[in-house]
Length: 485
Image (cartoon, rainbow, N blue to C red; front, side):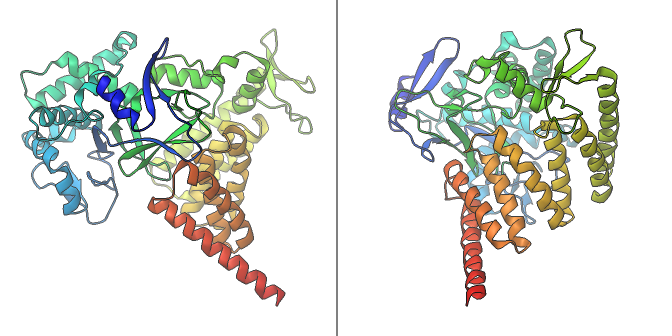
């Protein structure tokens, strides 16, 4: 802990133990929006490659490519070139040895989670043998210090971890390692490992970042965790005065307090007491929950939200007091569920996007009747339609749907949030493609204003976005001068 404290001084950070929260990370100087608070390379990581996944990702840089080469010995690792292969060789040499002993069927059962655990023990061995250097921010003691919550997990989860631990033990075949310890480390992974995402927040892998795992959760975070390749970076999204705890969000924050609390309890085994969650049950919280996840008044001109009646037989509008019966609501929900199953079935059987869009539009129509315009369910349906329309290159309709989602994003996320920035980016691209240059400049400017804070400006994605904005501005300027001269 002393070595870590000393290393964190260079970042103007310190670790303190807080009652009910455990270890917490605090700023020792002021941080401002866009500042990198801390960065860390993974102790171990794996790309999201399984026996069925396509396309595969490079083990070194996590990118996809048409020219990935598979390790000829173990047939598990993939590389985009010699540079990535060399960078991974010390660890993969040992990994390749243990994986190539397995028969084909057993090798295919090596999921990314199993592989991550195998790599954890192999990397510890390499550091013990001084093949890989240990530092204050990169050593196995930091993994040992992570919380496992073993006493809080279910019997079913314990059995699953034990089965996974047995598989890891059989792969490594090291008599000195303890199956119970492996199971405990799987519990640590569940609470502490991070999903590695690309610049557009698409999952590409999983990594363990033991120092970043010290950072606690808030549903109103002052920082955001993003990735540049495999490197994790925590950036400030608001002013963080010296002495303030650094906080990120572990979950999707667009949800009612009950939904967020449930997600945190199930995945991370704690109850959040952040300022947003502490309002649970208060008037504002009840209203927010009803709008995000409840029902709307069926009287179109009202637009109020419904709450359950005192006798429990229906739902009453909090605006015009009109009552909607439970059966009436149940009928619409049942129809939505049947259509959702049909859409999922057609998607899994690779039916045409047009067929799937048609079903989702029927769902959207029913949801518009039942849910508030800012309903999460309605927004998710519109996102699916938007994605399918973009696959079909139906740009005009895609833009119309993108515009429908923006007000939702603006309502449920803070003004500086990567998902809001990315939605403006999508809108700007579509507007530019359709020749709406002035509108594209406005949307791309909004995207840049947000994403330069959350993402910085060094990634290929951000460089491309900044270039698009400059080109759109130049095009808008040319169009303007052509009209006026």
